[in-house]
Image: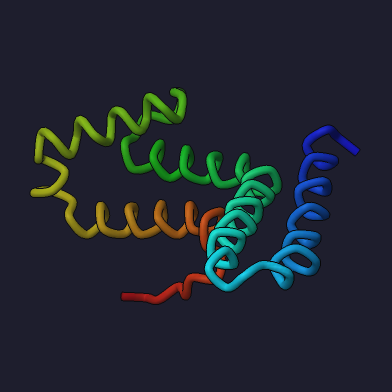
Length: 121
């Protein structure tokens, strides 16, 4: 077991304890804040478990869209921002851009809100 797996397990136990033992004993005005802490812990767990895969997916999507497969994710993000500022991608490839952005959002939602419904809008 890697240290990341152990960290995710520790967070999972702490979150379960918060939800099952601590929150029920709190006054109603403090339950919301405690639930927010629990949700943040769940996001951290998913970041540990799937964050690398999500970033690799984002990198692959951006590299394919931009046609630059041999650069880093931060550089690909910077290049996309530059393309958006220049405006040509908005004029020449609006459908592809919408598809890309939708895929990027859904990839990130896998971490922040995996229950968000995927629609084909």
